Amino acid sequence: MVEIFFRTLPFFAIIGLGYWAGRTRFFTEEATAYLTKFVFFFPLSAMIFRFAANLSFAEIFDPDLVLGYLIGTLAVYLLVTLVALLRRLDMSTAAVEAQCGAIGNVGFLGLPMMTILFGEASIAPMMVVLSVDLVVFSSLIVILINLGRGSGLGLATVKLVLMGLVRNPMILAICAGLAWSAAAIPIPVPMNDFLSVLGGAATPGALFAIGASLASKSAERLQIAVGLSFAKLILHPACVAIGVLYLVPVTPFSANVAIAAAALPVAGNVYMLAQHYGVAPHRASASILISTLVSILTLPMVIAWVS
Image (cartoon, rainbow, N blue to C red):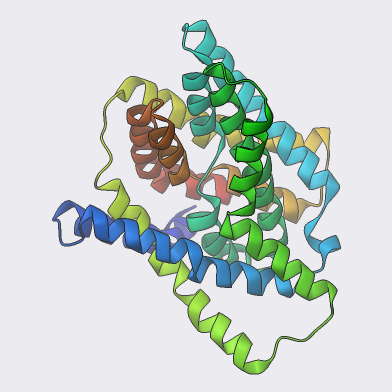
């Protein structure tokens, strides 16, 4: 536990550095937005493409892992939704809360961290987790918000979901990498070096951007945010553990990586979606802030347990 805590500490230290830069206004909100955009579209996409290009579709697409992780995540999603509806919240707000309770920061924090902690063998199961989050749950929140607003599941909503998937650089990087791998074309040395150098900026850039963005997050709706953070950091890994260990058993290594990924704090894009649609942005903001701070202790505990 102590050893893993010290191994994860540098990641959170860079997040803390970004938080300091944002808090002191050394890094403005505009600068943070551009840094996030840069990391999202370039270094992170380069890193994911390089990873995917060196894997086969069979290595990434593990049906048992997809199903086990999906069952565990969906269980938390439905539980948080049920609690929200019992509190008489509208469907749109319930969808945002469910997203906070079930979707972690896999792209910016999880992928680089798990690769270092578990080795390159963790890339394939992390790609599965990332793909399920992006394809299933990023689409689901858009559908539920539109249903909650009375838009229905019409052509406009379907088009909105599909365009969101097509324009997501992480999905494009995974698909392009797998297509390159399927073509069995070796990556030329200059191209590989280019991807390595550019992708190398993903980890520090993403962590710094997380910290800088946290500086602008508010701690409003504190009680609700604590509950959602508990769902994300404790209930989510517990439900995923049941899914991948008992309901749809997978290899121990894949199970370990999936459970550790489920213990990641709330993803930053939940706030962006909430702000974009004008649905409960304050509770999403507070959930990201609290879950990230608490995960400094809970994440090493979960990783130590699965290890």
